[in-house]
Picture 1 (spheres, rainbow, N blue to C red):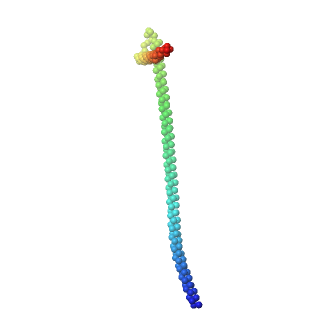
Picture 2: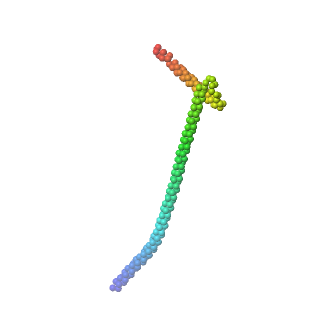
Length: 199
């Protein structure tokens, strides 16, 4: 009986040692888990702070980007409005310059036409006076300036007539030379045609 009691006591001591070891291991494990949880909570707080800081930085970057975009858009709108205004001014200036140029050309053409008409009228009047001038000096002589003017007009008329006659002579000479050249070109073909007929 004593032996059984001793065996039971030793078994109980063994169980106690095993239970103590398991309890100690559990305490160590609990301590390690608690320490790990504390570190994880600290890391979580740090991560939350870092995430909040990054979110603030992202919001600031978005705000800066939006402000820069708005500033660039305003500058672009201002440049476009300025260049549009310059283009309108240049178009208006071009139109005004074109209008002035057309008006000046029109005035010059009108002045030239008026001068031509005046010269033609003066030449016609001078020619009429020269043609209708009587053989005997029945009318009083013209003043010196008028006489010089009529003589100048007569000289211009004579020059024009001579130039016209020269041009007509040149035209006739050119027609004659053209006719002779055509005859020369057509002359060699006739003997050939005769020999072809004879053969």
